[in-house]
Image (tube, rainbow, N blue to C red; front, side, top):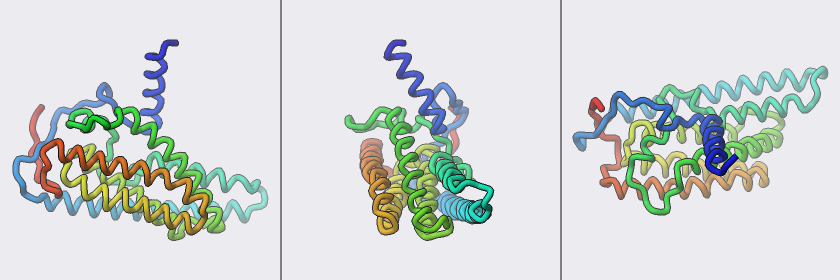
Length: 251
């Protein structure tokens, strides 16, 4: 097997695991562009409601897991490791597919990243799903450690902050990747995914220092990502830092 085939298999595997749609998998009959500098208030409301509802849905999932694990822990017919495996699988679902709880369009694709002007130092597209796959594993490990530290409770501050962080990341993905709002993506990536990652890492660290150290890698990566989003915005016209009204255009 040559290096090209190996790379192709790796790319297909990573994109499948992370749910990233490549150019060959996507069809874009329509696109949208900003034709004015007007603020799209409807979009702002949709983002807020979508994020809040996603957080609420994931908190309900935490509640459901807490009740399920409690039943398992109180049933002596189950080995002690069963609840830990279930918790790990649950955190893996959240880390890789948190968008299933979102009402917003959170399609993972490379379309926007492939089409915008990027700085020379920007990573190739395949790097992103690989890094996020690694971060997903680190999130699972650190979250399980926190969950164990909190006596198998899910409805606790560290894990609630964790799902808030995931929801903010999904909303940012809608803004940047799906809707290509390069201006709005700048403050959202800083005040959303980046800042919440710092907060979650700090709270994890206070709960279990090892968990905090494991999760800290995500802060490093999100810092790089935030700088990249800023540079892409600068290189592509520096549109206003808020959602602009978009007009649908046939491609």
